[in-house]
Image (cartoon, rainbow, N blue to C red):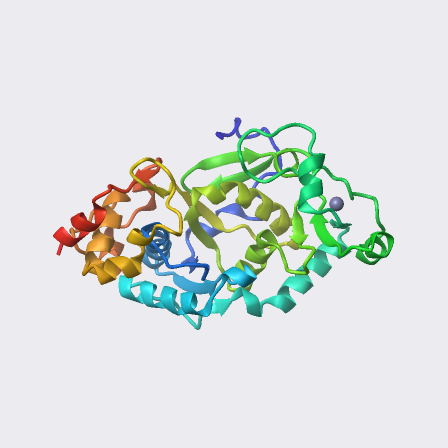
Length: 337
Ligand SMILES: [Zn+2]
């Protein structure tokens, strides 16, 4: 994943006068999905995003990523607000919701369309899976083989010709996309080879995640994005969209995730590590913050509030490897107070 020598010029981090972002107070974001309760892993990402922005006098906005229709539930929205508040994380302005950004998504699709960057696709998932030429290493999503590229004049023609609803895909240029990351450095991602032309509007009419995130962050003025490093490949896809939409790239920092003691990434179903469970078990939120700071390389008391971390917060102290959560973490947290 490391980059070639600088100057090997694939698409370089575009946006104009480079330097800029470093000196201006940033706008960071917390973007939880209301598809379950927040657990320690989310808490860590949010704490780091909050500290990074606040430590430099920046803003923090909250956005509820509620595009994933049926899996999103109102009770989880209430739950995540409660959990963030319990931890001591605040935000500026009212929470935004992806489900309220429909007009902005439509406008972005129109702009991409006008640039000739999209085409209609009527393929089902099963068809894409069976059409892929070579068995792919790793799990991940199937690469789209380009079946519908240059096949239909537009979505209406595709639907008339096939009797199916059409989604929209981005024409992904061949070659590497270079992503600059505050922690991981530069990495090159061959989006065309890895996932191919990806969906920006799904066949059910919903905007796809990659485009939604780009539009959301632009709408909210977000210029610093700190999140799990499982999303680093997504950054390359988002960078393509940002370049096409003339949206500046944010300062990205992709953070190695918390894992369970066996090294497997924490799933949302890790109920015992849900903040609500910790709260019910009598854990002090300051113990959670103190522990998260400690495993993130930040100097902190065993119990701390997020605000107490700001004076000495430094993202560069983060370990560059996944952090295992010990099996007895709940006892350890309780022992802190
Ligand atoms: Zn297709």
